[in-house]
Image (cartoon, rainbow, N blue to C red; front, top):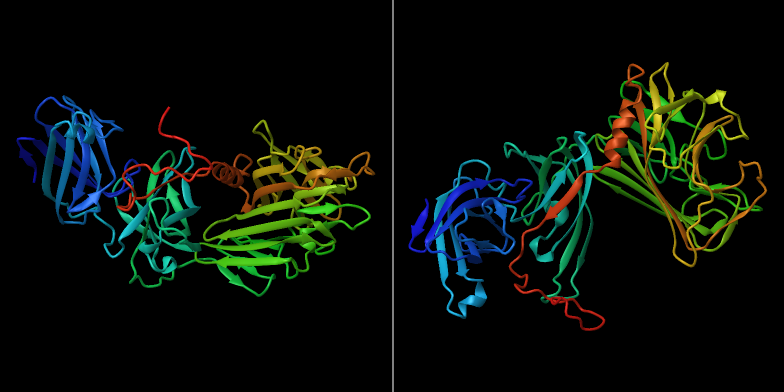
Length: 553
């Protein structure tokens, strides 16, 4: 039903499900006013409830001052959680000639209203959940994203729910049809702050939500995180993640791989590539025999130590659920109290790679022959060749045992090499690593220190690839000892990817190429929340060291 009177008219144009442009349930209305004045919207109510979120358009152009311009084709989009087939009443109050200030000068106020019945499709997902946060995911690189892991952090008013882990649901909205798909989610990192309750701060619960997203190339999609249902039942989502074992020696597997962690250190010890191949990548030769060795340090006369030599690490934490399983280990390296390391592994449902992040903190000055990270060590049982993505975009490849042998470095590659992999073309299997993030900093005096940034492939009884940060050992002057300054931090993020080779030379490394492109260009994330009624209508200045007027030029 459309409403028209002497002051003007409102005409319902559409009731819409959440879209990337307006990622909330909303209605669009066209607006006509009598007379030749501009009208600024002062208040919007839907079914008697104050609505703080709305967008005014004139001739299809957004107007940030929320003003209907005289002579323009005006419309308004109003956030409204409409339900299928529901009866609705919407009212808009607007003031002429500059809004509220003009009312005291006798400016005209108009009230426009309309009633309408919502369609039978596309309405609110489930009224039992009172609130939702909208997450807009945008793909900009032209790669279809299928089951891409997402981690979303939300700060929500604490009184809006009672048990986040039990209540939260994630629902994807098809951008074309509006069809809803509930997706498995994992809620973690829950904390509540309640030190203040005034116009500046309100009790807030922080939650983190993980789920897998599907987004078409060059498109955007909305995922809704629903909450606020105290009667919600606990839910168990299906998952292919399976974790067995105890302590550090866990086995983690999904449909793509099975990973065994070292029973003493928790480092990745071996990886079995499933995918119809059942090929094991491992090391099991020197000392602890782990596959993932670093970060590590060598400062004579102390022994050369790696994170894989922990027995055990000082700290250890796991986090499990239907979407991901995490292990985190941290503490000083053995014999090196001034060098602290933290390593995190993330294993995801339906995902072929393992994410690894590490930090190496030098707490005090230490003079070293070697300081490295990013090291993977394999035996020669499976792998024969080594490939890497070159800066030119071409893929380089060498036979491992045709390169110079230990103690000479077998092959130097660029520090920012996008990916590298060992492979065996005869059986069609490979183990790769994707470099995603690398940084270093120094918190105290002076600049951060990296002696010579590069990576290198090495071979002897084993073959390995590592990233030197400071490294004189495998040079023509190996007696040199270089200071790693106290207060230095070295950070890395990599993805470990066991994979099947493509069937021909052109497609041999297509799997790791595509995965590197997607991981290096994550989806853009925008989180949109409704504006709560308790938010002050006027801007509230922060608590500053000294008074400063931020609203004046």
